[in-house]
Length: 284
Image 1 (cartoon, rainbow, N blue to C red):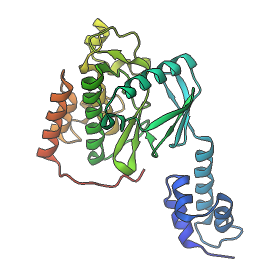
Image 2 (image 1 turned 135 degrees about the horizontal axis):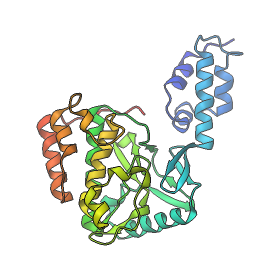
Image 3 (image 1 turned 120 degrees about the horizontal axis):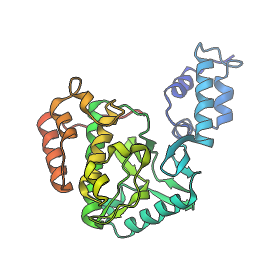
Image 4 (image 1 turned 180 degrees about the horizontal axis):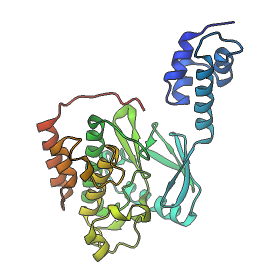
C-alpha cells in the first residue's frame, strides 16, 4: 500500500480538474489509482477519491444552470446552451456585433469565442456568479469591473446590456476579471426595450418598466444589485446589508446614477477612501 499524502493534499485543495491535471502532470486514471483507498493508506484517501471523481465529472459534463434562454451547462472552460435556440442565436448575434465594434480593452470583458451555434469556449477559467457569496474585498473589484464594463459598453457602442444578472456574469479568479455574456436584451440607448429578464424583473428600475426605454441607469442599477447579491442579499435590493456591511459601500449600492462614467468615478473614489488597494487571491 502507498501513502501519497502530497497528491491527496493537492486533490483535496483542487478547485478545477484541468488545473489539477496540469499541476500534477498525471492522467485521471493514474491519479485515481494512486489515491484510491484500495491502494492508499492515507486516512483521507476516500475523501480525496470522491473529490477527484466530482472534479472529473464536472470537467467532462459540466454543471447545470439556468439563464434567460433556459438551461445551460458549463465546466468553467466552456458554456453550452440547451434552451431556446432563437434566444441564444439573438444573444450570440448581439454579442458579436458589440465585440466587433469595440476597442481591445472592452473585449477583455468577453474572453470567449463561439465555437458552435449553441456554445462558446472561454479563454480563461470562469465561474458563474450564481449562488456565490464573496467577502467584501472581492465584491469591491467585481462591482468595479461591472461598472467599467457598463461605461465602456455605453460610451463605445451606444448600447445597454439590460441583462446583468448572476447567470450572465462569470468570475475569472486568476486575473480578478469578469466575463459578461447573456446579451439577450441588448438595446440602443434611449431606444425601445423589447425584452427583459423575467427572473430578475424586480432588479430593473421602475422607470424602465414604465417607459420601456433603454438607459444607462438600468445597467448601473443591475450592476449594483449584483454587488448586494454577492454580499449575501439574494434579493439584490441591498437594504438588508445596512447593519452588517460597510455603510458607505452599501449607501453606494442603494444610490441611483444616470451616467456610467460619473458613476464609475464616484465608485472608485469611494473605494480609495475606505479600502486598501491590494490583490487578494480568490480561491474559487
